[in-house]
Amino acid sequence: MVPHLVPRQLVRLFRWQVVCARGASVQPRTWALASRIPSLLSPCGATGTRHLVCRSSSSTSPCAPEVVLTQERYPVTRLPFSVVSEEDLAAFERIIPGRVVTDPEVLEASNVDWLRTVRGGGKVLLRPRTSQEVAHILRYCHERNLAVNPQGGNTGMVGGSVPVFDEIILSTAQMNQVISFHSVSGILVCQAGCVLEELSRYVEERGFVMPLDLGAKGSCHIGGNVATNAGGLRFLRYGSLHGTVLGLEVVLADGTILNCLTSLRKDNTGYDLKQLFIGSEGTLGVITAVSIQCPPKPTAVNVAFVGCPGFAEVLQTFSSCRGLLGEILSAYEFLDAECMRLVTHHLRLTSPVQESPFYVLIETSGSRAEHDAEKLSDFLEQVLSSGLVTDGTLATDQMKLKALWALRERISEALSQDGYVYKYDLSLPTERLYDLVPDLRARLGSRAKHVVGYGHLGDGNLHLNVTSEAFSPSLLDALEPYVYEWTARQRGSVSAEHGLGFRKRGVLSYSKPPEALRLMQQLKALLDPQGILNPYKTLPAQA
Image 1 (tube, rainbow, N blue to C red):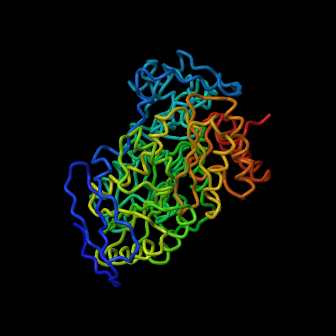
Image 2: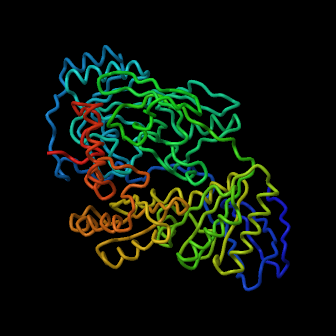
Image 3: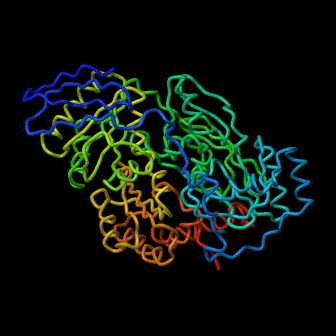
């Protein structure tokens, strides 16, 4: 139900359409807004209630072309690890009876990333259910010098979750149990293989929310989220996993179980070891359980979707957001016109506002519906009357909220259907966040099918994507290292939230000094001296 809004300045009436699902009736809300504001378009645009997490049809279609082996596409040499033998398979079968997979058809999905850009040649998939089983497996692999590729939901963007050669795939999919939840503190303890969306439902039924939300929430695992330090759509409100994760259970390369699964908000005793593994991408240890702080579930959630005439107006609207919405602002996401064209073309979604150069999704979350609605009303009046926003729509009920969020969350899916995707996940100064997009359009010209920019403006995080009909070495050469050099000149980061994985490991030096790289390599050598955990990932190759 749309809350009653009491405008403060009655200049002239303006219809602010509440977005609806396809086929639903529209109940326009009449607001008093400033003059010279064009009437909002009123198509019931965004599609209804289909699941927000859909993998690209190119990922699952039986007609999709086979992905080239990573070892053939990229210059990488296999390290001197052992090869899995029949004796090894028998040993694994004793450790986890009935959960050793060698069927090539089953293995195919675990060998290819969901973007279909890298493909390994793993011949064994192991499915442990407990930390003890993971410990036995890693202890055996350590003794045999067998390389291991930890894998969660396989939703990563940088090739970090699939083998490069024939590494053993260690899946956490069957480690999917909630261990405990405290209804007063909101502290959740669970195994690493729990799917984020299922955890969200679990805690929401108890009056809380997960502190992170991702477009891939229907597939990604919480252990993988932590291992990659995933950011996502709630970062602006709740911060990073470095702050919300309270404890971890991790199995080290030699099979040692490191139990730091505390549920304490404060623990100032010695080094905070869990921080080593958050964002380590499975290269220092395998996360098997997580303790995480869940905030109370907001009782009043609103989403506004607006059009802006330029990126300068997107920035100014954000400044107004922070000033007028304050503590209830929970998300500020932007996308350019090219993104909107892709989601409307490939996914048949419909824009609920008139065509604009930029679009912004603004979410507020609070505990008092009337209070939040009044603040949002004041904000929208101001940005519309000042010309920062030219058109917009508002949603308050769950179905309509999801319809608006789909326009932002499913951009990656639309890109995957547009061709081969070159993905860049950059942190940049907010005022320069979009400058690289038009720069690249001019640089690449017709060689690129589309160059688009979208992301978490409130976090200074740009998702830069370039599509082409097929993988092109010449196009890649035009993009890299140009994109990384440009980012380094702005003192930005070459990976804001996706991690480095296989595809970005060679560009770490654009964001970290040599001293930091050496220390990282020393930590890797200390915790995994044989280098069996997720080799060829995260850190640059050493001579």
